[in-house]
Length: 120
Image (cartoon, rainbow, N blue to C red; front, side, top):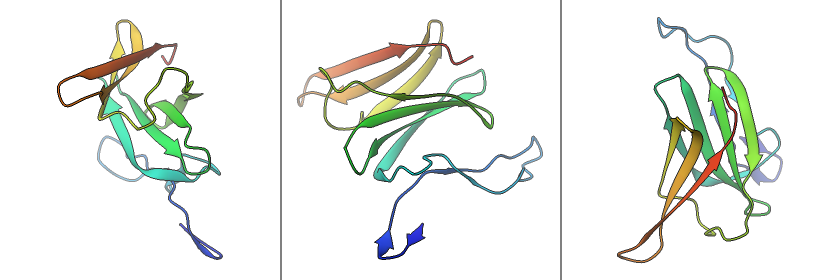
């Protein structure tokens, strides 16, 4: 997205109907938050999908969960006891209602962190 003096990376989302017809203009998902690429996505069998990203200004990790075009959650991930990088993979689960991230801790060890919440 061009801005005076440079460019900022943001996340956009466009909705499509079942016939793959666009349902309006793309929406800026990250509001006024510049992000550090890449963002990670995940989806579940119930039509929910998530994006995980880091803010360019603070490095804080955020998770957004949507069902179709409706945002259901936008949360800050506490930095306490969390890796400083984005996970290498994310997933959504409905039983229980969780978001999970997978990080590579060493060449042979991985770390999984999950968060539960209501995003129905």
